[in-house]
Amino acid sequence: MVSISKVAVLGGTGNLGPSIVNELVSAGFTVTGVTREASTNSTPKFPDGLAVKKVDFNSFDSLKSAFDGQDAVVSVVGTLGVPGQRIAVDAAVAAGVKRFIPSEFGINTRKVRGTSIGKILAGKIAVVDYLQEVAKSHPDFTWTGLSTGLFFDWGLKFSGLGIINLKEKKATVVDSGNEKFQASTLAHIGKAVAGILKHPEETANKYLSTASFNLSQNELIAIVEELVGQKFPVTHQKSGDLQKAGEEKLAAGDFRAFVDFLRAHNNADGAGNELKKEDSANELIKVPYEDLRAAVESWLKEEGAL
Ligand SMILES: NC(=O)c1ccc[n+]([C@@H]2O[C@H](COP(=O)([O-])OP(=O)(O)OC[C@H]3O[C@@H](n4cnc5c(N)ncnc54)[C@H](OP(=O)(O)O)[C@@H]3O)[C@@H](O)[C@H]2O)c1
Image (cartoon, rainbow, N blue to C red; front, side):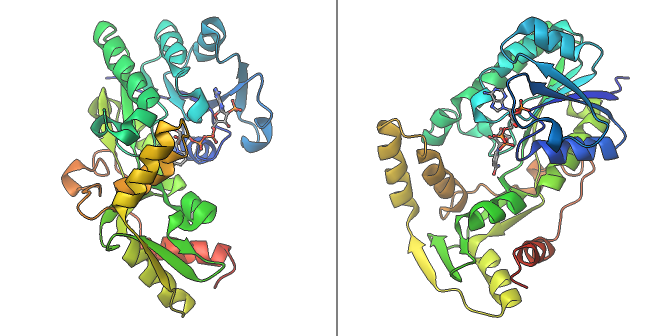
């Protein structure tokens, strides 16, 4: 029976990383934060007393020495660090690490190979392909991928998820606004990672999906309007126009195309990218769904709108 207690977290200092570190610590894992020598933002974001190791992310030896003695490596590196995870995988195998969780944490990249958004996510797809290959020849080494959908609380704070303009009390809706999409709070994602590592046998060599909830643009707007007590005038966009704008940007080498593709991916009528119950790992890894209204209310309170 495999058991995991020591966990190294790569890139734990960014937008998502601190929630993963905190939830792993709360769940009783012994966590080591692994941060780049070149990092300017590491120590202040780690909880007091957390073991921290500095590495050269491009050096196998440096990563291997940071991973020696660890049972699992969770990578939460940002986009620029995604391709470099191959060296981290090699170093983890050499250090005898039993489980590697790559930096996925978004749409299910297993389902978009060859599509426009899949072209932008090619680095992530290649790392999961590599993990599959490596695990075949190293039976003691396993991996788990985790799709989470949109970062709900972070995305609301960052951009109103591209739906709510809280300052101007207006909204933007793609297509009918009724299509449901997958979303997770940062705390939920941290709990899901802990849940994977607490259930190592059931989650070995699998690409899993989790969510706090599924929601539609119209549901979000209705909750905001009800809580704020005001109607938000809506501007409509067509998913086909977003897709076309994205293609034009991508052809010009402009990776901001991702946002256009993502909005179409989540919100186009008939897109079918909500997390269906039968595809959800929530039960397997023992993480509960969350209450959508409470999550929106908490954001509005944080923004001083309630
Ligand atoms: N689903 C969503 O809505 C959503 C939203 C945002 C992000 N994501 C995904 O979530 C994951 C984490 O994203 P994030 O926004 O938390 O990342 P981030 O804040 O951009 O970066 C996370 C950490 O990665 C490390 N890092 C940065 N550049 C690196 C490089 N070139 N090489 C190696 N490490 C590097 C840094 O840690 P140190 O300085 O400590 O080394 C940084 O603090 C990614 O897979 C991203 O695509 C999903």
